Image (tube, rainbow, N blue to C red; front, top):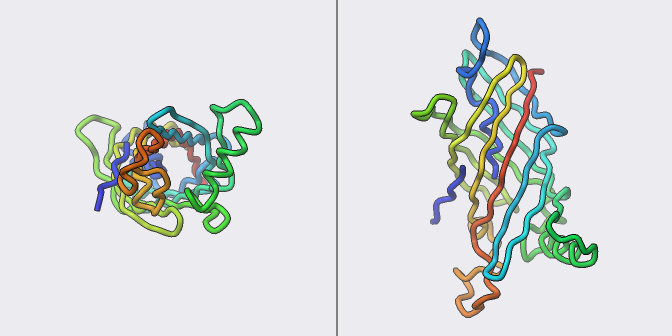
Length: 203
């Protein structure tokens, strides 16, 4: 089984530790994802070009106890998927419709994707962590691992990450040369990128 590499999703790094907390006591409590201030950008490439767009988080919660992350889960609203690089409305709608179809994310059947934290480990560089968790897309759950950067400022947590996800792990095989060797320059690369900027606030 291919290892999903990430630096999509994630989604979890934003409250990973209060060791970045610039304050007197240890951080404790729950943090709610600020969906209005958080951003998620997707990028995908094919042999002949590339596309990018956005999708929104619909919610998420992280629990920190004694400066340590003890739980976290996040939900992505797949119905909010958008294409931003194509300006022609007709062509934009055509690609978006294809991405939401059963060839790709089957949005009518799977309106959300989720990420649940399983562990967080401090990295060698201050403010950096290795996050592990379970990513679910199209009802298929796979483990992912990614480095995360986090800043804690008072009651606000901010985090950034770039995640690489192998779409074929989630039964998204359309245009994949891993399964259709003869498609030549019509191939779409298996990996897609998710760039995250997340903000969470204490409840």
